[in-house]
Length: 177
Image (tube, rainbow, N blue to C red):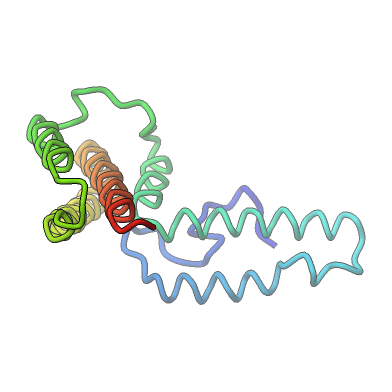
């Protein structure tokens, strides 16, 4: 069984990279989950059952981290010794800050009825495009070890992911979900 000494990529037997094949990741996860699941060790010793619970927990954390681009990016930066929880204004480009203000204003100005749905969809499409661009920049910067650029791209990814969540929430409110 693996241990907390292994990084998440080692646990899931995939190369350390921002580019991850999500189908392969899920398949490896399911295989490993079946191997370490606590039910397989129900008749084992207390120590075996505890190890299975710990391995399952670690496997779940690894999978949940690596399947989500922003979490995967933060994890990769942490492996490179960068703490992404410490953000200051210098880490954010002035263009991103201005764009953030403009997009938030657009969201706030939308009518609070179904007439806003088409514009919300247009905003979502633009945000998804920007998110993909940030992810591509992150991957290139990480590959070339331009860690400051990778960190900036991570913050962009994080911002666009948050904005996408806000758009989804507003859409659900407008549709009465």
